[in-house]
Length: 79
Image (cartoon, rainbow, N blue to C red; front, side):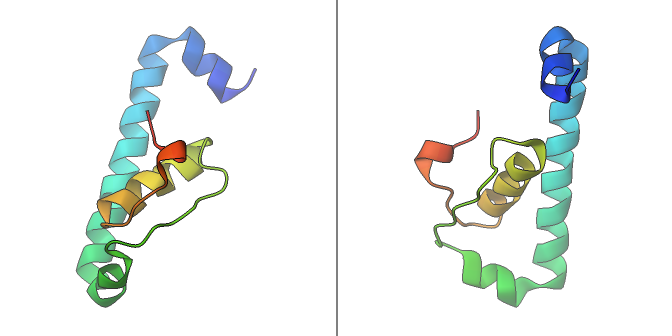
């Protein structure tokens, strides 16, 4: 059984997994804003396509990118 199926079958696991993804994205944004502000500034307003954004790592990456001020195309927006 894969993680998608497990999350679909267990609402508590789904909430916990979503919490972990959000926390990881927030931590990445905070770290990058603190330690690499010059690079972060270059992302502001940029449009970035992330392949694999439907997966857990890609979705978390998209959250972090948006948190840094870049744009993820609407067709790939997160739910």
